[in-house]
Amino acid sequence: MAAKPLSLSKRVVVSFILMMNRLATGEVHPPDTTEEFVRFMGIRGFFRYLGFLNKFNKLMDKSLGPINTQTLVGLAALIAGCGFCGYGHTLTGALMKFKENGDLHPIHPFSIDALFELEDHEVVEKLDELLSKPGYEDLRRQAKRMYEIFLGELEPETHEDELLHGIIDFWRWTVECTIVEGVSIEPENAKTFNSIGRDKALRRRYEEARALERGALPN
Image (tube, rainbow, N blue to C red):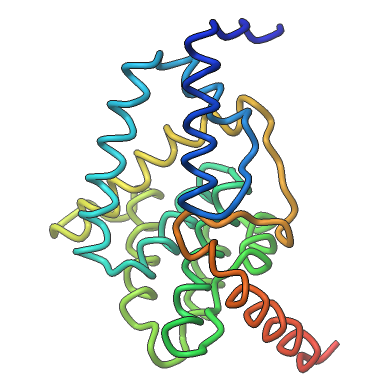
């Protein structure tokens, strides 16, 4: 069944949001997702959603750290089955980590792509393995607990647990619009979700480092 066409006012809002998003992130995102948000929530509801998202992002950044926030949101999108958000948020976190200290984050679009083929408990085991290197202790714990909460194996006990539970619920609902619209993307074409996407020189250095990493891995 074809989606209901947007009214003129809603089309104007979608164009405005896409323009502002391009200015903020340096990326051209597909319009389908924004169109579905506006169609489903209406103009007023969509801007209320954006206001809540902004507050939630600030809370996550303060409590979990900006890099871990992006990675955990990407993993929550993986739980919900959305490659577009899973690839994009993990790329954003990986670029932030690379800019911080030149480290290649073990969770990135290509590692996420491989996780889509695994069962939930296999994902937990693989994440535990990927995040075993020094410097990722907090993220390793957070990712494990988030999955345990999702699987019903752990009741939230702390403020951090409640936040992880909130990430799962919020992104499971959010990505419905990308899934409904059938937005799909390959990991190599992932889009960033914050201002780091404007740093094209950083992106080139990052991609070169990833290419070298892949070349160093055994076949």
